[in-house]
Length: 215
Ligand code: PGA
Image 1: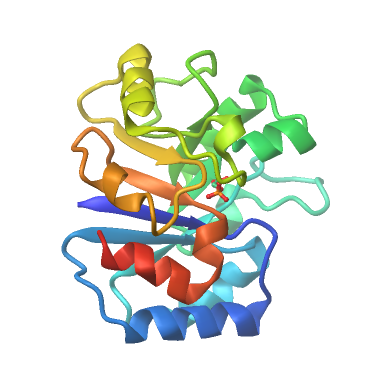
Image 2: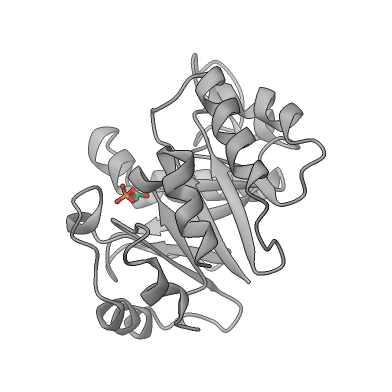
């Protein structure tokens, strides 16, 4: 079973999101081989959860959770508020480290909050230097040069990185960075890679479905 994690980042409104889901569901994919984790902007998680109520093959993830558990932190999206709505949360994405100054220390707080509220963290790391706390199961290796650039990292280099990380047998190892319908098969063929985190190529429903179809 391979994970296909769609990271929409700060894109789409509710209508666009619902259209995307309608089209992807209509295509009927082989659900025993893949798990789709859809990570829309936070405000869309609740309505999409309603829409996906009878859909077993697509689950929802958040793109982040707050480092704060609760309290007077205006605008923060806490793990507590996401419990029961998001099954997964992307944490420590390089865009958050870059634009929102997230440090390993902040990332660790976010991971703790997610786990406390039954949300599986998907920890993004840029290289072997980023800290991986012991309680993290899912790791997404995303080299910065490959994100949104069309320069996807070759499979061999990803596997080299995995070896350097010295993961546990129960870790789930995901790759992300310019994955699209033309390069997806090379990644999915490798038992070393448990799934893919897909940004730009997940935005258009048909381009995402081209990926799903090859999984
Ligand atoms: P990309 O983004 O597929 O557009 O490179 C991946 C990510 O940032 O998670």
